[in-house]
Length: 195
Image (cartoon, rainbow, N blue to C red; front, top):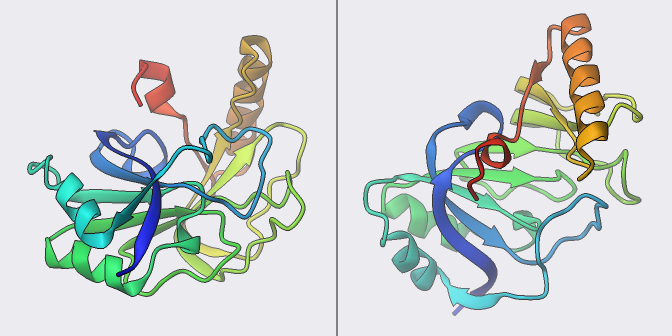
């Protein structure tokens, strides 16, 4: 039986991008193929769970049918078996990926957040996604990396420095005004103090 390294499973609101503000069940996978300087995921602590275990954990929140597979990098672990189990239970499955690996077939909504501007080996290899979300730090040039997407976002980088964050936000707003094909994505969960 396949097991998955899971950092945590929790119920909250999606904080970013197209689905911001929507109630969501998060399955955070441990393990990533990149080491981004601003990553806030603990990769040391995890539990090995089967697909049945994951579905059972999600079942503790019966009102929500929207699942976000995140990480780490979920494409390193998500497989057709897990997606089948989730769809059989009626879940709409979204995935957040850095785009460096193939997307498993059957994901309902794919958000790609390329990290090539920040780490070696981060060049995305996907050609089309539902949502493109580029981390904006005011220093790196914004690129779509040739990825086709229904919606495109710039998301201000959280540096941990309130003064720098304010400057980055102002620059991101100016960028969107100058490039209206992009939209602004804020990390709403951080702004309102939830996970």
